[in-house]
Amino acid sequence: MTQGVKEQIDRLDSRLWPVEAVMDRLSVGRSTVFALIASRELRSVKVGRRRLISEAAVREYISRIDGDGAA
Image 1 (tube, rainbow, N blue to C red):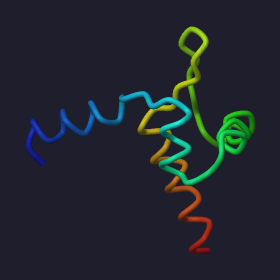
Image 2: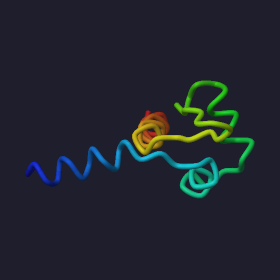
Image 3: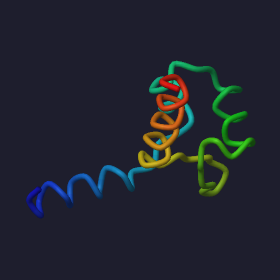
Image 4: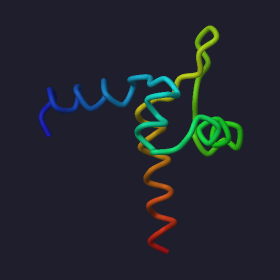
C-alpha cells in the first residue's frame, strides 16, 4: 500500500459522521443508533450538542455484527 493511499484511509477513518448519516449507513432508526451508543456497542463523541460517530467506529461495529452472523 502506498503512503498516499494509507493517508487517505487514515483520513477517512478519522472522519466524524452525524447520527443521521449513521442511521442511513446502518439502515436503522435514530433510537437504535442511540441505543447502540448507550450500550457502548458503537463508539461516539460529543461535540457541543452534537453526537458524532467516527468512520472507524462504524466499521468496527459492522465487522463485529458481521462476525456474529457468521458464527
